Each structure stands twice: as structure tokens, then as C-alpha cells.
Image (cartoon, rainbow, N blue to C red; front, side):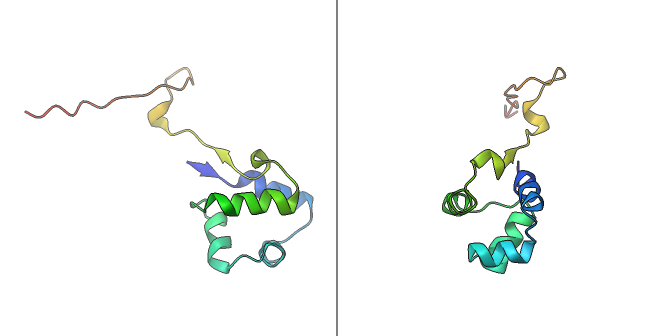
Amino acid sequence: MFSYKPLKRLLVEKEMSKTEFMNYMGFSSSTTAKIWKNENVALSILDDICNKLECKISDVIEHIPSDDYIDEDGRYVLKIKDNVQK
């Protein structure tokens, strides 16, 4: 899963509201809503954000690992499910 929490923190630092961000970027309300709900947006949108806000991608989005890929020690692993038919 991905989170736009870093972007929200950046906007607080810049004292920019959600509406100001939407207008500054020229985004539709649906694109802005997708960002606020941590939904997928096109890479071109992320590129536009980085360019206009003069920031890195890590200032915009972060990866939140799924429990399916973390072991009990917090390490990334790939768990393969057994799909054997009986």
C-alpha cells in the first residue's frame, strides 16, 4: 500500500490547504480526492507534484508494507500461498 502522508506533512509545512494545493497544481477534485484517500494516481501526477513543489518523490509518497510481506522480525519476505488443488 502507498500513503501520501509525506505530501500532507509537506503541505502543512508550506501552509497550503488542500484546496490551495488543488488549485496550484491544476488538479481536478477527483484527482485530489484520490490522493487524500491514498488511492492510485498516474506517475505523471506524481511527477507534476515533485516538479511544481520542487521536492523528491519521498516527500510525496511512502510505501506501507503489507502484513503478507513482513515476518515476525519485521523483515520483508515473500509468502507463497499453497494453491494445490485436491
